[in-house]
Length: 429
Ligand code: IMP
Image (cartoon, rainbow, N blue to C red; front, side, top):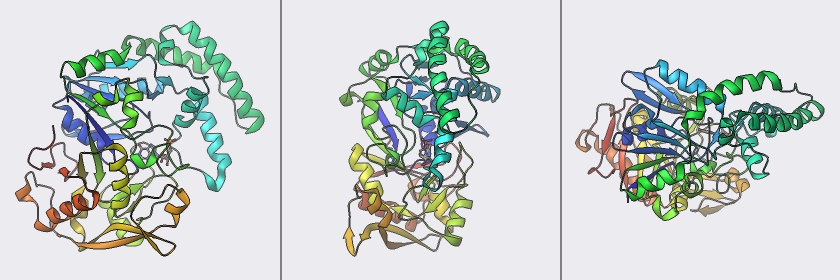
């Protein structure tokens, strides 16, 4: 099988960018299949740190063709700005980037509507990234969306944009009392962006399917995490796309059977940004230490991330949903400082022990974690590059996670540097 699916096993920010970039060395094609610029995939390129939002993390590897697939919602202004930013950092974006004609566009009125709706939710706000993701996917479902292919026919785009913007402006002004979107000014910016994006437009699914059938290595790069999946996450505190492996077929236009093995990326602990239940959330000095050592601030929004301990109930749920054959455990080095490391093995809900992640978000909110303490190792793992470099207690921690999740750990990441990774028996493809 030449495809490989890489997805987050928690609430996002698991370090997928780094792992994608690492595996992209061996990939011919890297495909984003869902989400949009709400992602913030941080990658070390040489001695620089680059954050990708819409561009697939393989873009720094000139050998790999990078695809923004039909399941992505694409902000044309954001994409052009990102291309300029990474170009200034020495990463060439040319024919190596393909944008699917069917990817739905995130337009300025989506962001304005999202900001107004989040404000109206008050204390019940979801804590979205304000990148227009939800409203753009909503338009796709109600068949009011505009697709990337229209950027190549700007007159048609203009017509559709004017129609949609007029309706959204009415909603913004009359219902929310918010300022309207400046249609003429936005159209001018969008026309310039359209000219830049048009050369990248392509019908990408046949190209991805051909690459797979020719045995080329195709990496499907997931964004966000499985617990933010619109169907199986902690709804409504989720994103608006399918972040599980099921998203690949519909989001890249490949048969489910062709997508390939699924690798889940999980942090050695847990973080979450935005609102919603988080059973293993820590407080006080422990949370602060994780946040500080793990630099746990949103790569897209700069918000401090909520921090807590590894939740095996949640990761097991993600692994089962997507059929994860392997896990890559990231940021193990962040735990170097702890004497004892709590690991959540089950929940207690209303006095009952629960091993399965509840379908009801209220139940997740009421779940009390049942922790077992693992011994810490109190030694730096940052220079480890082989199994023998890891302290025995760190290896035991990894084995414990494997046992609890029922999935082998193929590799651990021990620092931000691109090659700060220990692969176990070369189990990564
Ligand atoms: P949205 O995707 O901007 O609509 O945000 C919905 C929820 O998903 C919020 O809780 C966000 O914080 C969260 N979210 C969206 N993208 C990411 C991400 O890339 N990493 C972590 N959380 C995310």
